Length: 169
Image (tube, rainbow, N blue to C red; front, side, top):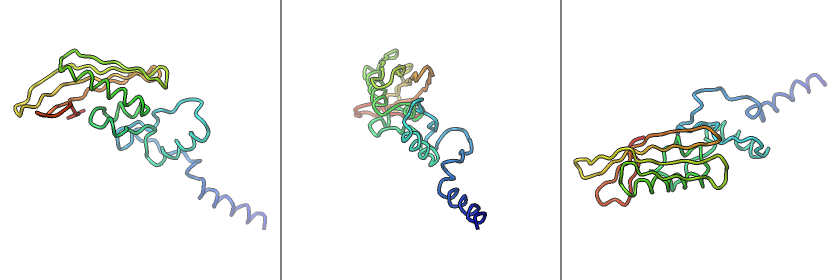
């Protein structure tokens, strides 16, 4: 009877907790949005945060999702490595760099919540399209815990529009 009971217990436990104990097969490390599913994992994170983060990761969700306010200004490759407050600072830097509409215009930011997190947006090119739109090539550079990420994006502003938006990353 004990042997039968012992054999029966692991099955429900596995059914209930197997997903938590089993490691997920490794693919490219990128989610459907292009985010690295290991982004933002910091040492010393609370146990609850680790469990919730693990569940989100197994569900295919990135650790940091782009916030709606940065849509059209930041690429997923940048936004996914930043916390929401940092995403807003990076988006503001892009707005500031493109506002002057001059090649070479740069705007920098530094995180107020995490040390060793900063970035810049720099306008590296500008073109006028036949339809009257103006486009700029902008380089975003972020540094998160010593790791540098650079992304080039093409941003355009249609005639009468208030700001530049990502046309192509």
